[in-house]
Image (cartoon, rainbow, N blue to C red; front, side, top):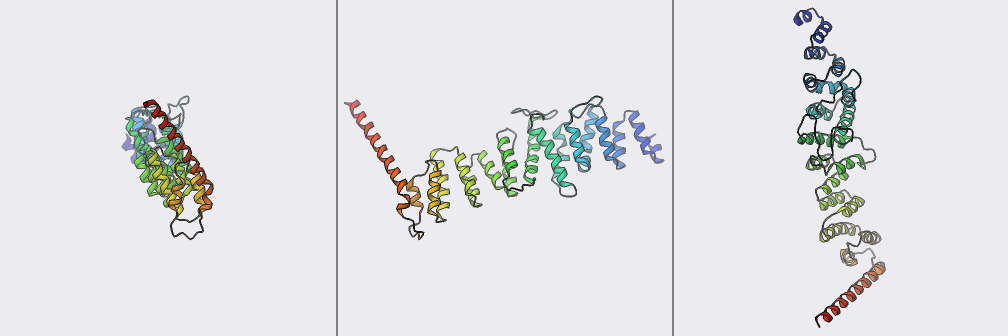
Length: 324
């Protein structure tokens, strides 16, 4: 019957007959082959939720997303309504090949990226999505399948327009997702590095405890404020913190601005000593630096040393009395 109808060019009748017979696949295949992709998408949304319906969404997802990304995402995120089953049974992971099309350039590429970002954010980040904190269970997939979705979302976030250059949205995403078990920090590091996302790269380094690398990257891009920000976030031992702050100090000392150097010392939260600052100044410096510039800080340090020595002497005396 199908061949008879198609041989006579009665394709709409073919769709009608297929739907009457419950042959959803034939109906959708006919519409797509005739270029009626929007009609096919609308019909898929109206069909009852069955495994066959969902399999067709996965199969034709790439072409439907490429041509009608916004409408596809609206259907995926829509709540069930009267007479329509909705797409709540659709597994986001099975649609990953379709949404990878958002990475391709071409006509309407920005719209596709925006739609893919909206849906993946809904799935991976929002309270109303399929994701459950820490458990991350999918409708019909293993928890590990979230990694692919989150990797794609990382790429899309990195590709978003950033007029301010602050990378705020990307940094926020990496910071909030970084502690989740299926977020691939290594992939985020590679993505940020390859796309020149300096601030986000330092955030990712911080998530894996590589604070020294985070500071080094910031200094390589002459971003002192970012370096100091990462140094303050450091959760290493005191010696580890000191090494990081010393690297920033040495960077700042090369500029030869003694006032800026003194200010930086004051911002180090007590990690650095005045001796560190004095040692960082080149011996043959011709910038006019004098000890007088650091007089106040030197006096404070000497007073602190005197206090510490006094306390130690008191402890020694106490130990002597105890032994006697």
